[in-house]
Length: 291
Ligand code: C5P
Image 1: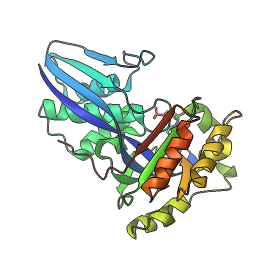
Image 2 (image 1 turned 120 degrees about the vertical axis):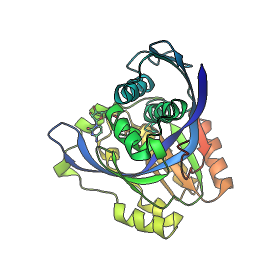
Image 3 (image 1 turned 135 degrees about the vertical axis):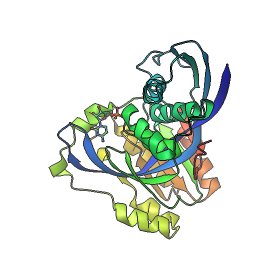
Image 4 (image 1 turned 135 degrees about the horizontal axis):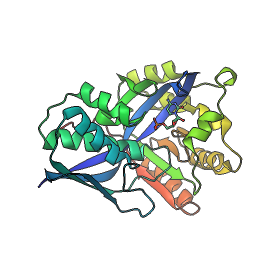
């Protein structure tokens, strides 16, 4: 049995805009995504036998084909046509679940990268991304990570200049927000406030961290269900500690702030930690090695 350990990096959304609703029910997005150092650890072992077997260190996560890591392996074997292999996937979660940090998507992407290396299939980045989009909308970005403009369902990727080095403080309130429910609350004709996506792209090109941070915006913040007040409260507390900008990531419920000062970041982290259990301090990841 051969095996490989892959780091599955989380993502944050520097911005999220929704352009339109597709006939399929999915939405046409325009968002700037950034990989961060916070990561799950995925061990993929492969040898003669059959079946895809997943274990995780979180009791409440499914171990069957509902687990995105399992679906990614199934998509890989369907595409390559390989048979006679048993795959064991061990997922060690560090990324909070239902947070908008791409925890499931990045696990799926890590399984695709690992199988590509273990079975020496030498699928290129584009092919892996096409397989990834069958697994979930954000999985394609998580294949090579870094910094990208993501359009369409999230699978049309354009590489951008990386977010300049900074401290990132993340805080997830105890409640989760359902992604399909949040999408259903959006009326594309009634989005009044949108992020300045082109402004963010220009600021990234100029490596101007404050200019990126003050343009960050997520259209989902306008349609949060009742009881999500902690999102605004966390943003406010991050800003009180001199974050350059703070915004909800994905469909939440996690919120992050960007800091140029490590001292401010640490103060914000410690302050939030006194109220919320799930707080993290992390940094930018510029690119993920495809092996
Ligand atoms: O593709 P994924 O399984 O991650 O999507 C989860 C849900 O999010 C979908 O069922 C859909 O309700 C919503 N979604 C959407 N438009 C997107 C991505 C996701 O409406 N571009």
